[in-house]
Image 1 (tube, one colour):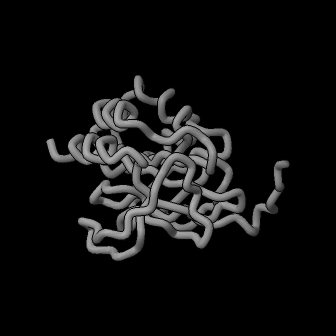
Image 2 (cartoon, rainbow, N blue to C red):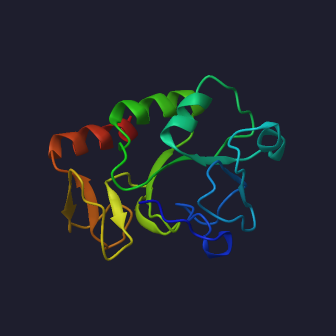
Length: 171
């Protein structure tokens, strides 16, 4: 069942590192706020003219942009998913890093635009931001995070996958 949420109830994207730069958001799940601008039709000439420093979109949207040169991009790429959708893989992280040359973050967003879990700059899992975390094939890690936050994180159930993911950023 799809729940329709009126535009005024949608939330602004939570940028992973403060302060947020000029960011093009390619999904209609959020509202524009300050330097965070929603482009409901995805990457368009209008989005390109906005000259974003960061881009947030679905895995498919960002995958489609990997062949484009986006000269203004200098801060981050944020992959947005809903619970139950495919998660970002090590291969995806690598592909986006090589295509965009900026850090890659993942966020899981609920149906009403609420942040459920988000990757921090330490890239050691997704910090749980909700009372009902979208576990899927993930487990909860209560150990301290390299970013300094003490909130539990969702990490791959296979700890070898987490080590491979963190190694991508240690290069």
